[in-house]
Length: 406
Image 1 (spheres, rainbow, N blue to C red):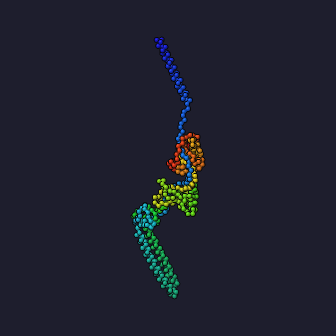
Image 2 (cartoon, rainbow, N blue to C red):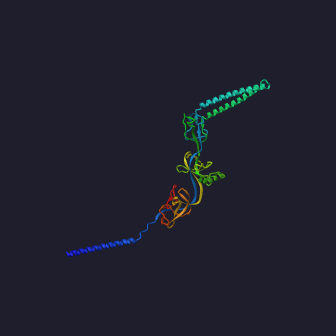
Image 3 (cartoon, helix red, strand yellow):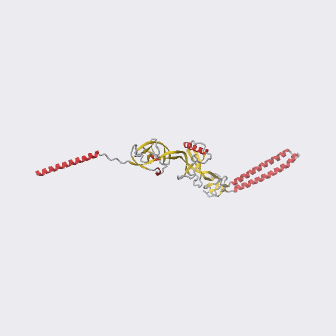
């Protein structure tokens, strides 16, 4: 019994020693781990692009609406029932082509009546002339009184006036009869008729304006421009008007581009042909009109479109993607990346924006590389792994905005 107790004590002592040794080893491992430095994270891979230098046109886009270079309303100038429509709606018509006829019967009767009055007046004039020719020699022989001669002379002159008035009424009746045949005043395209055969036209509330004939070649665009932009564009327009041959020229501001509703560029350039006399004080805008050749008739009146004008030309402008520029409280900055991958924060002065490219007026040189992504994560003197991206490979993004943040 004594021997067994002694063996149990020795076993318990050995277990305590083992636990102490284990704890010491764990403590040593923890101490060793605490003294080691963790490995540094790898640098961020950031896309960078090289600033380019090229000539750039500064353009101004203005919203406008198309209209015919000539838009003429076709009116019923006399009242009556519409008898026929002599054209196909929406098709071209020629000058002098018959468009509508209005029932001419009432107007023919007025012409006949006027002709009768002319005949009556002509008869009265002949009688008055005969009386005068008979009385005049008698008056010279004092066979009749001077009063009789004066009366015959007055009746003759009054008959002349009556005939003239009757002829005028006849002419007016014939004019009104001609108005029953409505002809196209110009070559152009005619729209959908506002009245159908059998309707009474020419007096409200019935249709008075029956249709429109528009000349769509050239097509005209009316647009409004604010005061500041007007001054910039007006200088180009004046230069164009003072050019000797008066030919549209991009350098002189004569060339305008028309951008259609689907974003397509109209193939023919245009130039300003008319403008308002003053700036509208209510809206602060100035109204202008420009003509664009439209031989294929693709552009129709009434469409919304944008007019693009070149208002300036920059030689050797430094340009980078718009998204490479960060703005903070009115200060514009870019992250310039050195050859060793070091990032430097630099303040720049941006110029005009052209599509997805930003002109930099100062603070950056052509050939320097700038970061185009991760701007919110970059800091001055940070190290990155630059991934060179060509400017041509970037997809255009005309609606890109400067990224906000530090």
